[in-house]
Amino acid sequence: MVKAIRVHRPGGPDELHVEDVTLAPPGPGEVQIRHRAIGVNYIDIYRRTGLYPAELPYIPGHEGAGQVVAVGEGVDDFEEGDRVAYISAGLGAYSEARNISAAAVIHLPKSLSYEQGAVMMLKGLTVQYLLRRTYRVKKGTRVLVHAGAGGVGQLLCEWARALGAKVIATVGSPEKAAVAEKAGAQDVILYRDENFVERVKDITRGKLCDVVYDGVGRATFPGSLDCLAPFGLFVSFGSASGPIDAFDINLLAQKGSLFATRPTLFAHIAKRKDYEEMVEDMLHAIKRGHLTIEPPHSFPLADAAKVHAALESRQTMGSMVLIP
Image 1 (cartoon, rainbow, N blue to C red):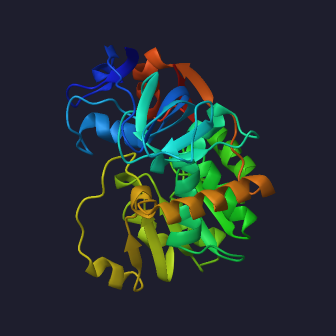
Image 2 (cartoon, one colour):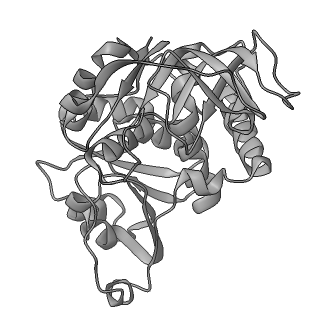
């Protein structure tokens, strides 16, 4: 038996319950991981509320880091005692231990802690596919990052700046502005106090942006489109303020023959070869200092409900992990 967080019905943070669950030996192609740290992400809230449906009951969580404690039949790349991290489309991370397909697991470099490993996978690889696969950011690219003080936002600002981009970020408070600036944003907009569209026009002297990275959703749409130069790309990768409602596609034509996309990490890592290449690129960026995985804020696994409440109310900055 292991301790785990389970959800029996969609709802608020109080639907996260600490329970004892039975953990079987790993099956063919699987490894069993004893978690040392578990990543907490906004997608976990989407699952819990039912915005992203999941079969009930379930154990939340898509990423974690720990040690391999058992290996299933046919697994050759991992052995007991290996330090590993993973990101998986399958749920089950909010637990003391779990079984998971070896195809979702990578070896965790000794230079990174378990806590860093547990937050670099979803956030780091999200930033990788946003900057390197969805839109190839390079020197001179004008970028707008919404929620620039968040876990993904900070990494976007830092890596985009390292690639030579002109980085503009929106944040909700002066405290968060300082965080975004430290991460790499050259200009920061306090969206609660300023019209972010007008400020983008001022900052770019009317040239607007080549790409907008929007993980906020409803609250920043369609304003994000007005921040784009002709043929610019609107990238919606999250819905922290709620999903974007259906809109007339002719709006893209009216605002300058714009492009819009709604990518997901799990589509990008569906093939092991792509997954490995993305991880390699991310780790290379970390080694070169283009991407900094700061030690996250740590909380006991049993406090998952409190952590969700803080994240959902947008009271947090940076990354968070649960410790079993």
